[in-house]
Image (cartoon, rainbow, N blue to C red; front, side):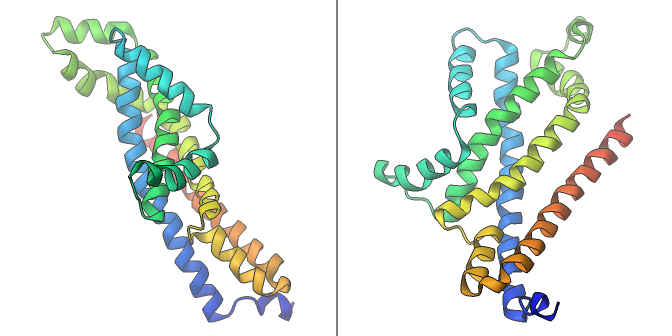
Length: 217
């Protein structure tokens, strides 16, 4: 048992917590951007704008059916070949945002389609524009229905940040690998701590989802 706890020196714990900070930073920024862009794309789908909605839908379907790791590699390794150089942190954020926006767009479209058509007709009968109808009437109702799948997708986003270790982003998973690579006796304790941290992060998100469900019921 003493061997188990020997992995948790002050230096190792500090190193791991630094990786946790990067994981949380990538997650928060990606979540905010994904919600914004995913909502916009979902509304474009829903509005069925001639040609444009079909074009955006095709691109979105391509992105959704690509492995996230491939998108991360493309963002970090291929974009510099096209003249766009991003720091590793922001390359990860861009890749996560692109992938999660595509996923959330489908959730938003489904949520909008679940709103009764009478809500649209009533708003327009009262003189509201399309934008006012969407912003004041439809989206608030749709988001209530979308909270559980959105939170589920965001939990997936947090877990998927570990894939960024493939481009050597020094997030939690990568730093854990560095620690137990120096001493194989640390493999089990480090993995246990990483498991606990990821569980607490994602369980916290699930509790937030339940709170919102209860609040908006």
